Image 1 (cartoon, rainbow, N blue to C red):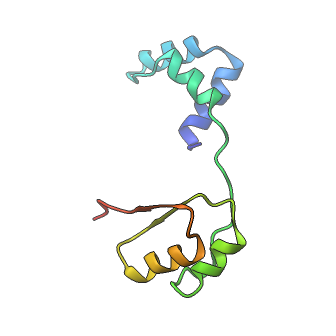
Image 2 (image 1 turned 60 degrees about the vertical axis):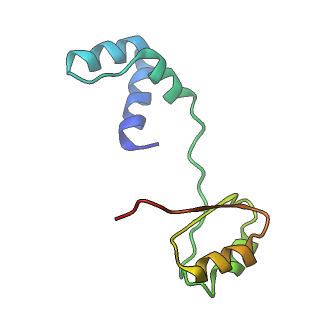
Length: 100
């Protein structure tokens, strides 16, 4: 959760989803009651340790040590693509695109 969604959730637990949406609307923020409910029902963000040194040489071992990682996102560097394939051959890989 972001700080904003945490604040919305905290506020909604003490009032109601509709009250949060109505108050947000009075301040010019578009937010529906159903969106507030979705924020309340969202699963917590997964937390896992990140590799200390993210080089193409260390990534395969780190991925093998953390089998709960299901998605590997990387930049276009072929070394990282090979490292992800070596360390997590059966997991999903999504290339990172559109970063400028």
